[in-house]
Image (cartoon, one colour):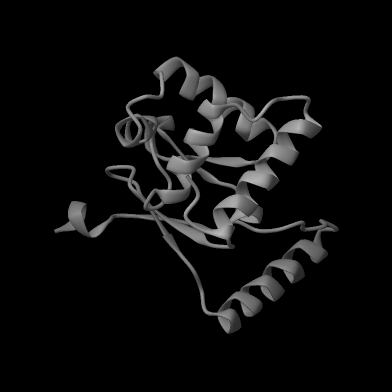
Length: 150
């Protein structure tokens, strides 16, 4: 059951990405996308399974791989290659991550538009100096979260 038009729009976009790769948007993939939509930031596989206990673990691994391959999901690797998953930015909104080097927790954050514009300009200048064409950027800040530092 959809709660907003945004949910339907994301479903339509994910379905289109899967069709382009000759994949189907199965009910299991829909439920997985729904968990990622409602999650509070990037989720571990354990958190995904806890959020929807009807999802088989092997299916979650397989479907996350397919959704990542078609560009619907982004994998964020934290400490010890411990991954978290979220919907790709082009399906949601542009944001950055705070990644705790101690516990692996990932928190989303956004910059105000003025700061984002300044960052974008600085990144393009740096890329231009070496002849690199930027499509988009991701900013991950590594450090220690409040829980681990205090």
